[in-house]
Image (cartoon, rainbow, N blue to C red; front, side, top):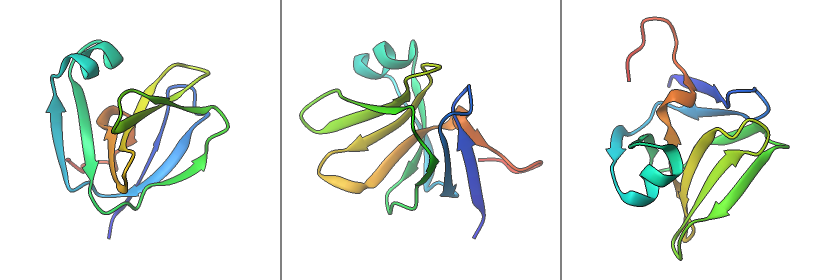
Length: 104
């Protein structure tokens, strides 16, 4: 299994993940307000996301069912998670460090 790494803009938050289940784009008004446009998310339905470095990782409860993670140092939008299912994560696709030649 290929493992990916990822980080925020300033490098204060780092994480590892397996390859995503799929990539999608959410155009809802909440995601647009959060990111300034559609949220392009790498979806993980069976967990596997491990935070390696996260002192500046902060969570915002954006609704009754979801929370969003961001770096409170550089402001990078990173994670969308369901509150009642800690196995589902959507990671900002741009935060993933893709191996050379690897496509999502």
